[in-house]
Length: 121
Length: 183
Image (cartoon, rainbow over all chains, first blue to last red; front, top):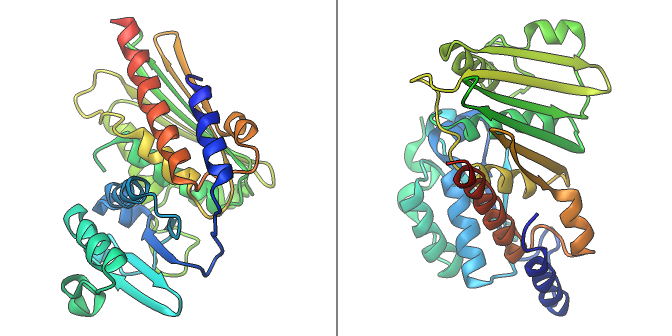
């Protein structure tokens, strides 16, 4: 494996950082990653969230792949959990994901265009 | 699904559901003998013979949220479409191995795509699993093993996003070099 030295540097840098990553601290982003989600394009969406978090070095936001909640027709589905508050977005492409990240996760304002209620089947 | 790495991600989700601790993904490309082989193995719960017989039926699923399970049938179809073969072996309490073989130059064989994203998502999964990835390209080999990375990282979790970015980079470059050296 190449450049393990780089990884060691990252490790040492991380060790000095104080990390707080409990289950209910900060913001959790859940991305539906079952067959329906994957084929609808959930993987690039998740990738975008990870890259944005890494770019801004946010240590209170986590992204996790999850299963299917049964609304396969309106995948990719993304849920944003902040404390007790849960917002469910549907038909999220990279464009919408970018908006969710900037407007909701950074800005604190829900992106109404894609909340699940708008598409209730 | 238009990338083989999307199929791999999908199949591996089954392994995670089956409480696997280690997922092994082996990709073997051989241009001279014209095959593209994908083997995915896990040490999860495995399946009984009865489950195994229903396994690639699209109307079989263990989930409760809907009545169909398309992951495995789609992967099987992709392989069959490329004059390939598809095989599942499973032992209860021991694990499952899925292998799919494609014709390398078949026009319907999808490209591998962003396997680095696939592996990243597997690593970010809520259950702390290990992933072993081996890519063989005409006898050249690239290996990625989270167990080795764990050793270097000490107690820093994989969910540290600078670690994740390093992992993605490593995989991307590893595979790129693999294909460059041969040509």
